[in-house]
Length: 111
Image 1: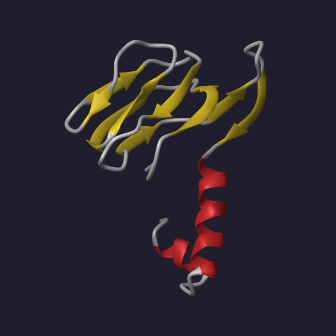
Image 2 (image 1 turned 90 degrees about the horizontal axis):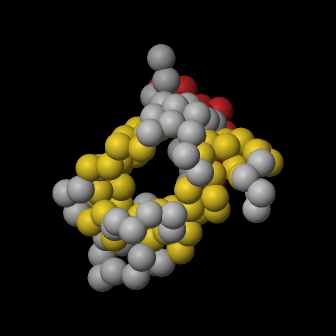
Image 3 (image 1 turned 90 degrees about the vertical axis):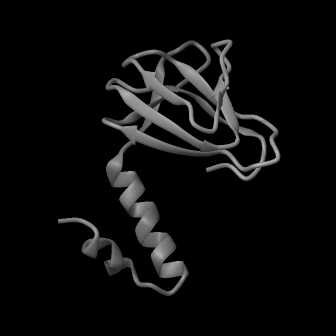
């Protein structure tokens, strides 16, 4: 979700990604298409891209199914970092603690 225009730095996924656009407008700087509400995007593995949320009256809301890590790329296209499910879980724990739910709340969502 993006409440306003912005971007996610250049990265790629070594596995496929599926995206269903709920609202707003988004795309990849490296492509000439944009997605809006109702659009489904299939992202093939291994292509570097920069996700951009465009200015729109509605926030960009997209349901992404990411089947592997996100690999951050430098200006030369070399991997300089990664982000995976364990990083998402860590962020959830921190958020749940911050809002008073307790970090163990995430354990109820994972089997």
